[in-house]
Length: 87
Image (cartoon, rainbow, N blue to C red; front, side, top):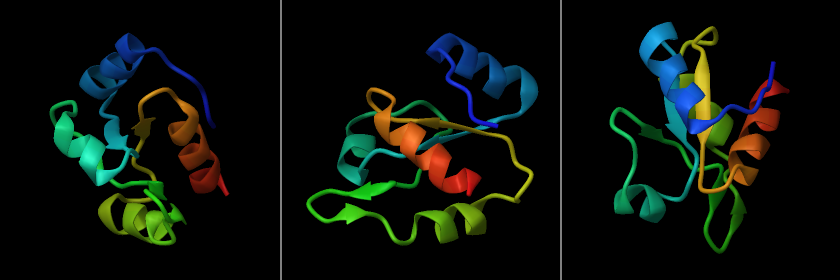
């Protein structure tokens, strides 16, 4: 199930319900600053397009039943990432 949540709601999911935070921004954006405990798995590769390794890396890092919060700068990439993972 995909749902939009506010940053405050996302923090509550992480702290109280055991969700993991996946930052789907580029490595450069991630290195410029990110929430504590975030895992960076870019959904897009700057200048190239979709990251062909996105799903395999997410699958290698997290068990299939791990609840995830996906985040980016404005919500577009995280929604795209959620749609990709939901397939």
